[in-house]
Length: 249
Image (cartoon, rainbow, N blue to C red; front, side, top):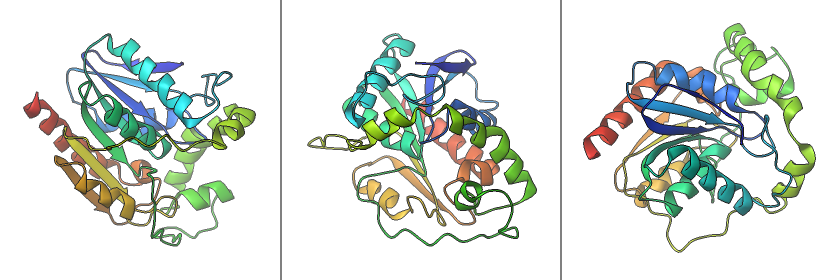
């Protein structure tokens, strides 16, 4: 599994969403973790995206097993923190459910979750709405030249690296095998965009019933591209989460 890393200390894995690679999460989350000492930030390419092969994988369960094995390898037997955006949040939630003793903290940002519901209609809150291509316009609710530059630099280039055959193969069985419980009692942060027309925010709020130590933030003026659109707020919310992780340790 291809990855890049920054810093030293406790491992922190950051998982990106579908159709992109580590460059998007690295660009959004490195500034959010700036100044946080003692963290080894690890940004992998998910199987079938970026430079990570998915030749032997045939389902979402296979991807989850590969991510768990990768986390065990890079953590070297110690516990680690998990952050997931979009599809990365789907796998991060499952990883925490499978390995609660190893996952010392979990942050889900605009996560894809089972039972998504009440998806709002896409609405542009800033910009003309005619900038860029269709993918950009469907992804961002803030459609400024600055956001378009970020899209062209960190999102669009990864599309050509997606293994479409693997994506279709895994997509036929993408849903993970349910477990008896999905609870996670470690420090958690759930951050959702109120205008997220991809996964919404209602399913994210439902997690509070199973996450007894979770903080929930539903951010106005942000959609599925929240890490791009609200970087300062993202940094504050993740900083508060890291503080709780430190206290629990």
